[in-house]
Length: 359
Image (cartoon, rainbow, N blue to C red):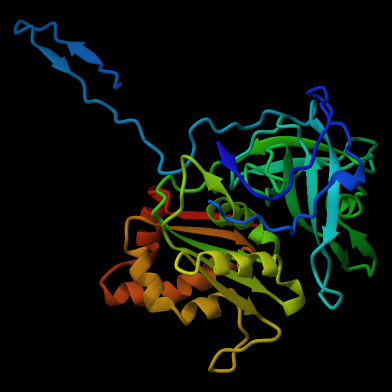
């Protein structure tokens, strides 16, 4: 059982295949912050030699995950039979001077899409492609905790950037699914598949150090983590560790969920650290642009000490080039301790302590 103090949105009952649309006036805005009130199997081989000795075969140990994977549901809904929800809220969350648009949207699920923090859902845009076939699904990281933005476990939220670019022929190209989602009006239907994914699930250990590295809309899974940690109260989970978020964006107008993040810092100053890297507006002491790896370099010794602990977990979501920049920071630090960083990172991955979802 868990509770948040954000107002719930009353959703009318519906059949499992389709969610009913609530009246627009019943929807609370997502920025109404909640307050924290907050047996092993044995195989035996028997020898048939004259000694007739029975020998037990080596027992293969079952791997126990360090993540919150108990009862995780995957692929409940597939492209041929998606869940049909409705858009409850769709709000632009980037400023007027931002290079591009990013939207926060909330869909009804009536509890029929049981997801966990760190999972993704698929969305199938309306219409058909140039061959007359239904559009292929696009995966998006979920931006809400399992309770959802309204605290009733009946919604799912996404953070989506509208994709618009000019191709080599000078033509303006619009991403099919991102534009479909960013243009959704309250009450519109949306076809949902999933949930999918286990790579980005949260650690079981409530005392773990969780380092989150995000660029742009890569903030989505970490918003889900942080809401569970700092905006909700759970009978079976209370976060007591250190959550450290590095968020990289091009301009201050693209600092997604800034007010929420700062509110979390007020609520839990000893448990939440927050660092922004605004590449077009900030520089480091050497005058270099402030990318996420540039900001992390300012704390490199502290980060390396944390990475040597067995209860530190790194999660990375966003642009693909981010990981190489972090490798460049850690190689020399690890070498000072006689450690090969690349090999060490492989061990972190094997131990579920290095988790990457980049695009």
